[in-house]
Length: 84
Image 1 (spheres, rainbow, N blue to C red):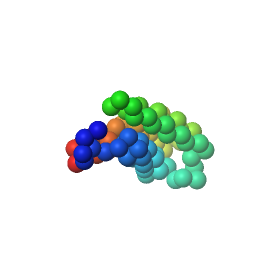
Image 2 (image 1 turned 120 degrees about the vertical axis):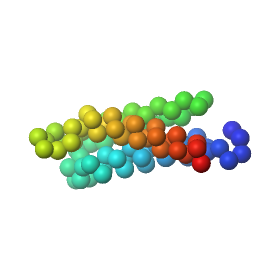
Image 3 (image 1 turned 90 degrees about the horizontal axis):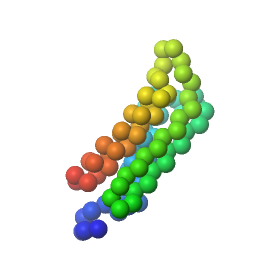
Image 4 (image 1 turned 180 degrees about the horizontal axis):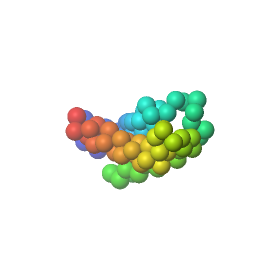
């Protein structure tokens, strides 16, 4: 790690916060039955896994798409962290 580069903990926290933020921007927290965001960052490799158990309502967001979008948001947030 070089000076000014984010720590592994910073990367994991940033990714986790971004994923959860996206999920709860699309669902009320009370409507989410279960949510698990698992993030690892080792040897420069970011892995994000999002599990979401939320209602699949006809006029609401698709839970699978929200989970995919949350993982993407996590990766984008980490990319931005490294650009700073």
